[in-house]
Image (tube, rainbow, N blue to C red; front, side, top):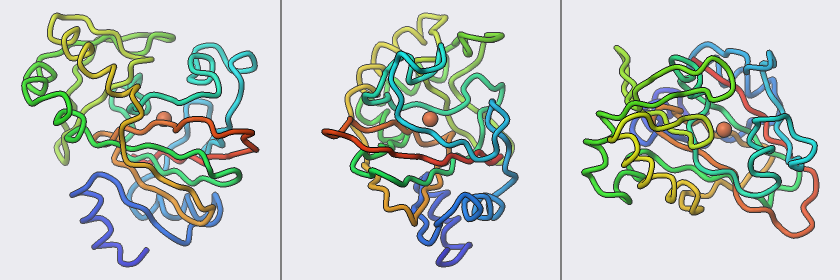
Length: 218
Ligand SMILES: [Fe+2]
């Protein structure tokens, strides 16, 4: 990293940063330790390797089961945790023609118009459709930070405000809008998962194997 203090300042200001010189999963874990405490994914893996797989061979309820090999909508990771994970670190390699897309909640709300923020503050949702769903707010409050959660695949609107927010946001998060990240195999991206949504770009022609390594950090 070019300078931890300046990188963290940029991460706090913009919500995501790109870090060069991350060439392995060990590098990714080391990077994660500079910003917090790495925690395992729900399947128990510390660094989860995510590959493009067909709908037929995907686990039931997974994003691949829902969207196949196509684009994944912009989303917050782990909305089905009472407090979603604070940071998501990603590193892509292989056939890197397929991009990852990121969009801040500020950018999302700007597209939808500011009144949506007021409704989002009042919205109530049922999170975690597949296991132990619970009621939650979209707004995240923490002594050190605030943010949002949103995932059309794992959150159901439960009051009028949430239904209106969902109507406005779900089209945008599926539209392909966002900043495109082109992977090179030797860089990583740190996302503030409370402030930045991420998604998977469209499938390129005759796509070869592509791996995204993902590390959660709280
Ligand atoms: Fe994700």
